[in-house]
Length: 134
Image 1: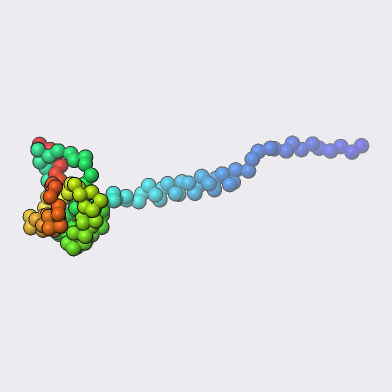
Image 2: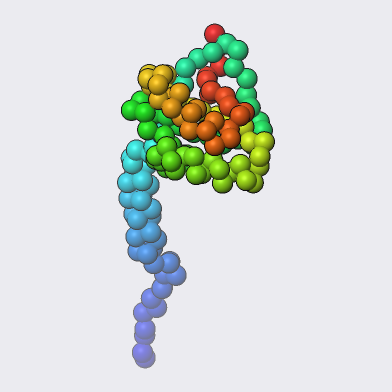
């Protein structure tokens, strides 16, 4: 007689690929959670004003940083480029509202220079951005 020993086969799945995937996910989250994220745009600290009100209309924003540089849509521009971009926006919307966001430590002459560039090409609805506070 031929007796064979019956072997029970385990039907367990191979978890090696699963371990690889979990390891890669762990490394991915460890690496990308430690990367310091910076918000898009420039860090400008606006001055506070009690009488400030929020503007909801279509606007053209000009940012003036501490060094006196002008930025439109996050891109550094010269005075002539600022005027050109504003002229293009005025063609689309002649009643556009201009908001000048200047750092609270910027020299006053840089803000006046930005306003002069805008008024020189037809900007008549101008405002200065502030943070509401007491």
